[in-house]
Amino acid sequence: MNVTGKPNVGDYFPFLRFLDLQGTRKEATLCTERLFKVFQDFINARMATRSSQTERKDVSSFDLLDTLLDLTQENKAELSLNDIKHFLQAQNGVVAENMDMTDAFGVTLRKAKPLRAVPSKRSVRSS
Image (cartoon, rainbow, N blue to C red):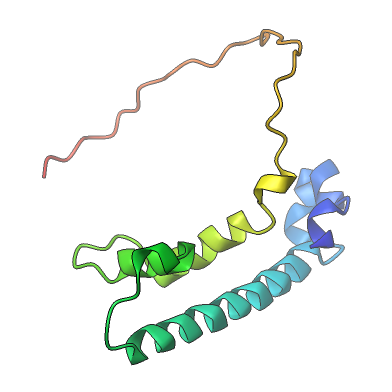
């Protein structure tokens, strides 16, 4: 997606962001919808093959999508198909070959104003 790397006028002038002068938000939305349609096709195909199988596959042949679909089909599943699509989008292009796992020395600088935890005044519900 080249959309994410383009300079955007709204980034430099935040009061113009809502106008979307360059159409960046619209283009990013269209690209994301296309990507989610591809993911949905993969999920539908996998669910169709899983429903046509009479016996369970060997666990060693499972992949990430099978595991995520198992999690969605559990009784107390907190994971939806929409969550799976967002997870797959975040994992897109992240493979071991692309990750730099070498040790390197670097400079660590202190922040001018360190972050502080501020308690919120929201009430806590007990369940």
